[in-house]
Length: 116
Image (tube, rainbow, N blue to C red; front, side, top):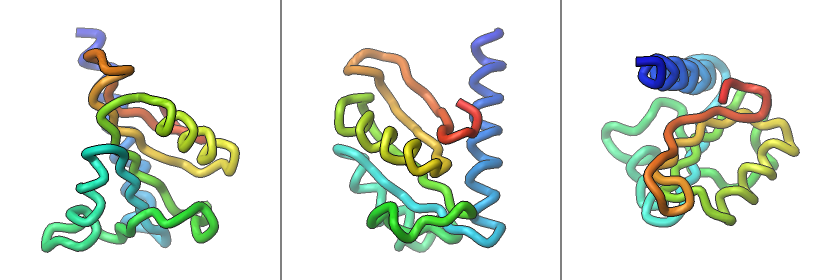
């Protein structure tokens, strides 16, 4: 039961982090890795797109009001490098990762001074 409680808290924190941008003055930038790159168009351009969602095009336009939603199947090297870049720039993000290193595991986490 403790694991479920922790997971629920992580999901709530991620939702709050994204809502701050979506319903505040910021945007949610979407960055997918691997197969999840296909979700970028869906989450930014479809009928059911996230409010204030834009495709991630680089760190330069991101402000402190913005958030980055990072989607990846695996916690691999390209993902790690990207997350490190966000953290160096103190950009808040939500990571949704299905598997860790190709094994079952992973989940939702936040970064750059947010919950995680």
